[in-house]
Picture 1 (spheres, each protein chain N blue to C red):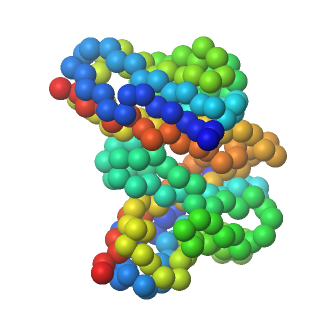
Picture 2 (cartoon, rainbow over the protein chains, first blue to last red; picture 1 turned 90 degrees about the horizontal axis):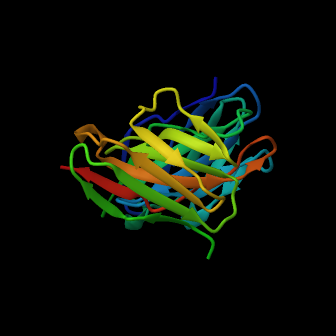
Length: 113
Length: 115
């Protein structure tokens, strides 16, 4: 069965520091993988997705993620954190069960000045 | 811009008083989803429509119902809201690509308060 694990429910970084949010997945077939961001009292917004093309995926707001099959990982990074990056981030996986995404439990990112 | 719209953004109801939340989309996607999200938790899928086919999650209480009268609209009905149903309700849409769901596009959500 497909699943997603996000290590670290809370991550804190200083403004300008590297952001690294971890996501590991399990899937019986090559997956589609997604990162979403959620700001308070808003819906989820797609940051980036992997659908079996380039393994390094660039998204909005300077974020990128690398699909590593050998590590079953899809970690999200940003070289330099900005205060506006403070939000909840969700990793999600879609495999051959056609209609659903499976979400991780989320990581809350705090950015300190 | 194509989008997913939810109305109202904030809904207050009384314990046991039926409430309906609405969702509309201009994306012409054939799949529509309803999620419940409680504070500091991931969205929890309640049910979804694949075209007119209704798919209920096994653990969704009978108190929650849904209607999809056409491609653009989908409604969430809570027949007798309890205090535990207070949450953010998110609507999302997607297409199917390569035999699996592609990007889900979310509305802004409806925050439900139960008094």
